[in-house]
Length: 285
View 1 (cartoon, rainbow, N blue to C red):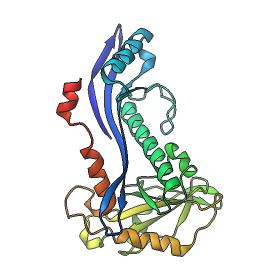
View 2: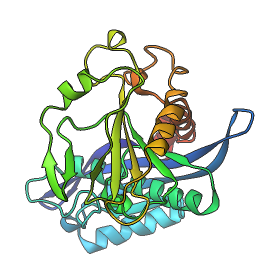
View 3: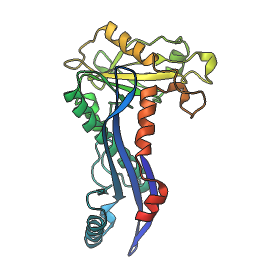
View 4: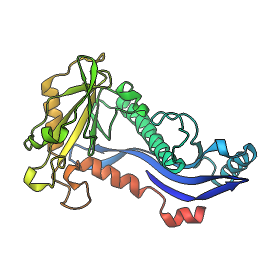
């Protein structure tokens, strides 16, 4: 997602941020010869506005102008309605930050739609960049069973389901500091048993600056009903496949080099290349 604060709108005594966002989701397919080819792609332009501080006549003019100039290429989004990930707008919530968060939520919804399409059409497994433990993914309950989610960054105080009760771990850095390279933690339930997750160390401790570097978080949906166990061999196989993709990323290429999975990195670069440049956006505005 790429967001741009275009300015501040003024109407009578009210002011509001005007935010433009480019969002997109894409999937690359791994051919038998190892090459990556485009499988799916979807992208949108969003204009994010807080409707509750804008008059109906102004909103209608904005929508009419958008339809005339952009057709279906621009969606007008009300940032004051309930959001799947952020919930309802709060009284003292920063309007610009909420717009950015809603843009990310819409991007996750695109990813969810793409995941459902791939899950129905492909027998092979596919990897999602990020977590499936969000409202856009039904908190892990509405995702194809052949999906795997990988997070390069994650909370240091995760919540586990222990005996069907949610428990917060407060010493995650110590646990991961003791994790040896190419090893994983035990798998845990979360999201009321709908998601299974574990951590995998990709890099030697001597190659990174602190314990959480070089570690990824892996999530899969529960194979059946909530709290249904999956085979340890399946978890080990996923971990091994991800380890095999770690070393293609050059050191220092960006701040997340230590946790990159090559196909995910390549997909990120692909979708970014499909976005409009800043100069083109300025011309459109």
